Image (tube, rainbow, N blue to C red):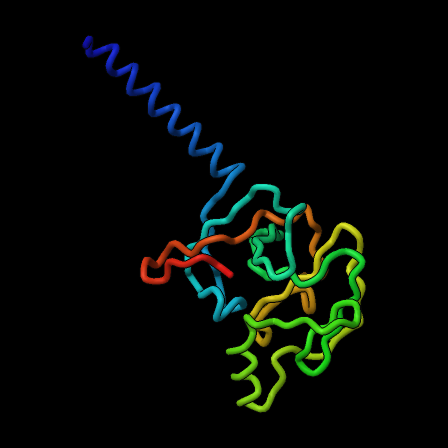
Length: 177
């Protein structure tokens, strides 16, 4: 093959690969680094996760872990409440529309809080989630800035995507629940 044609072929292939990679990162999924301890023990500081960006605001479920675009930084939190829902916390029990919600992902943190003689989540509410917004909280409720104390209600349009997989460090590779 002609060296000039081979070089052009390589350049075209490289350009196509770059365009595909940019498309995938922009519209399908992207990596994200967890910063801080607000999602312990579910996610740990400095873990790298893949975020699924497809159809995020329309197919969210209670308990999904999402990335939220903030002012200058992003946040990783768990979806707790949807528009129109009444949210209340009493004695470390979450009530949504007066129905108690089980939060199995909090078992370890609840045990630690009880052991130290404190509550994991301070009482609040009832609050009604406004239209077009979500109520989110971190799993490490003693050390989480979330809808209760700083982030407020989250606009659905601020959701970047759902956390799917921890991919680094290698020893921690897992699907996120």
